[in-house]
Length: 524
Image 1 (cartoon, helix red, strand yellow):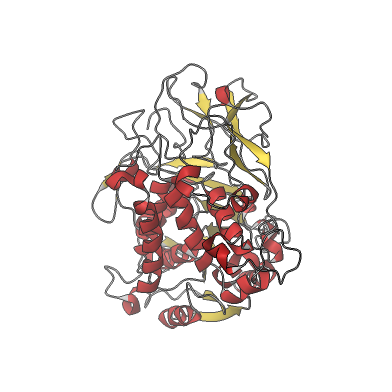
Image 2 (cartoon, rainbow, N blue to C red; image 1 turned 60 degrees about the horizontal axis):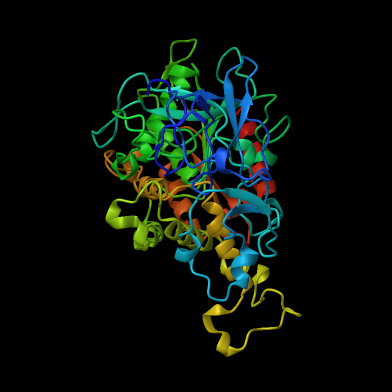
């Protein structure tokens, strides 16, 4: 991809040619609900400057995205983005159609299709307060588990066409990644952290409390690498990337099917060839990230792997020395595929899906919002929802107040407001086609595929493994982690106790940090 070091991180087409925003751009974390700076409000909030910039062809415009011009020290142009800066900021349309939860809850007959049918020009940020969704995730709140989502970091460009597991070829494959800490002289103090479905390589934005000197991810001891999933819209080649034959037309649904095996192999090439890592101390991840950790073990956790290395005594050693998968199993089950499919069907049901040919200029945002809401339910638990929301209604005099039966489905339940808030906020940082493709990639998870089954796949992987499960996880139940432990020759199981369900791996950071620290110290 000559001249492009970042992908277009939204579903919007690279369309109009203009001179106002044509020199450079920064990989964005906030997409879809944004617009070109030339048409934005002066009251927009600009986030802190990012640390890297990327050149694109002079006549390429990434639209619609909200940017603020900036300049690097070397004089080249750089772009910072305007977006949701904290848990209380969401996008609202300049036309006066807001997207904050208080507006939605107050609208007795709100309609998602009508809400998102307005022109997408002139989007600005405004402060809004959602009582149902303003708690910090790390304190057991019910908000989005991610903080500031950016596409900071560096980019690995695969030097030649990348052959996928299904035999298809991905041209100009690239992966965004971030590193923390210092690589030692032996080049073996490496910890790889894999992110979940809608996360990114900015580890500090979602596991930040675990990162830093004397923390679980101790930057004074370890060199931590976090890479964006291949196919994700945070700087890696994805459905939002321009096709190799065009600087303006994006892949969209023509983007090839990527498997978790493809994603992990690309990351292994990044580590071995680009960063010249000699060996990896541990691979850690939760949910989709845990699936990647399992795949790392299968691809590089044995002495007969293509990634095996020789030590100073010329003895073959595994490239990956330990793994720590969290809240996942050995394969994606029918239950998990079903939940992914319901989310995809929500997008397909949006009229703007257009029978599989959505317009990049007018994507099915209502469907994506509903898909996110479904996901947010599956990530938590009945007890968690009851404890947080119960039968509370917005603006009620007491918690016991409830709307009369005549209110019906229009009752302003706090849980309803919360879900709509989350679904709407998600639109600012993801796009529908990428969401479909990544959930399909997650469904490919099966460590036994083309390896003679799950039992054989890990039989020769003798490296230590610590598997963490969550006792309230209804999406990836504890029995799946027990099965995974049984497949590894040298594994143990630890349980995270939480009412938060699947998101416990992000919310119960003290427990997670304790297990990670103990495991890393035990295998120094």
